[in-house]
Length: 155
Image (cartoon, rainbow, N blue to C red; front, side):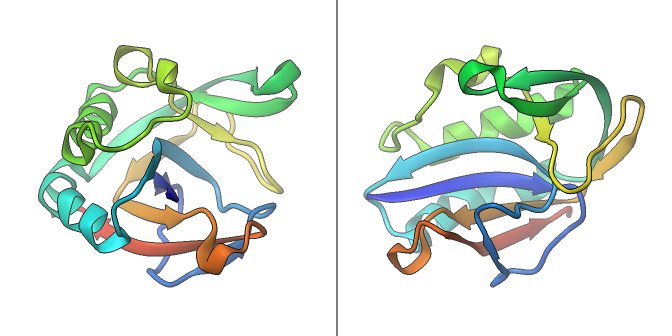
């Protein structure tokens, strides 16, 4: 079973980028999922849904703590209907054959945020969602790495 995440990077990245799991570029997670389908099948499902929904702005809200024991600092993304539509369209395109770890945080309970890293966003910052990227969570069965398999740009 392949583990993937669809994200909107704060600063667009190229397809093929490989990075350590401990050094994610700043991003908003759109959907985290596992599937038995190949990456090519997943990419084809998303090809139709994503490009027309990209190219909008979001505003960063307050800070919060996520994860086990509230140990992960994040910046919440203020509610934005275009981001919710992108999330829902990705879920619909992926279909029922994918498994959604943390399914309770999808659909109407989607909580977009940017996890703090070496850098972070501040409340009030505005970012443009110009790109969505499909990231493989264990390329070549290496759990220490992440690989950007595909990117979609705003139409």
